[in-house]
Image (cartoon, rainbow, N blue to C red; front, top):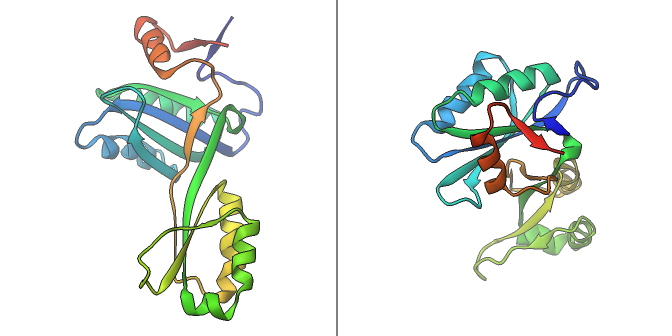
Length: 196
């Protein structure tokens, strides 16, 4: 039996994170057209990522918002009305595999004075990024969930983090279907229904 991309009555009014995956043509102004929908509804975007997809000529936007289910559903339906949007999908946290990528810049002088920093970063699974030998800083890179990446930042801050940056969430659904198949199904369907 088909499972709706939108309808899920469980805990519908509980504020929580949702991941929205949007497939569109890579057209000028697309990002603005998408984000203005959230602005008008006064919904804060927790993170946003834009990238190529596995389908040639198709761009993927991954957006995280914190709201109630009914509001998230309305947003996704409104996004799908945009001319260049091919399809959009709403996911609960347990319906996707997701990660964020973070960089931590620390002075080499600080690292020499506090060798325990390498132990801390190693325990968090962070690696040293290759840079020019004469560069006066060491850059650690870490992939993980936002909470774990921020936890490492908190542990490094007492030593002095010169710069920190983190990507938006990147995510893939747990569905067994390929994007090309889903797009074909949605194109030939009058309603957004996918097989469970």
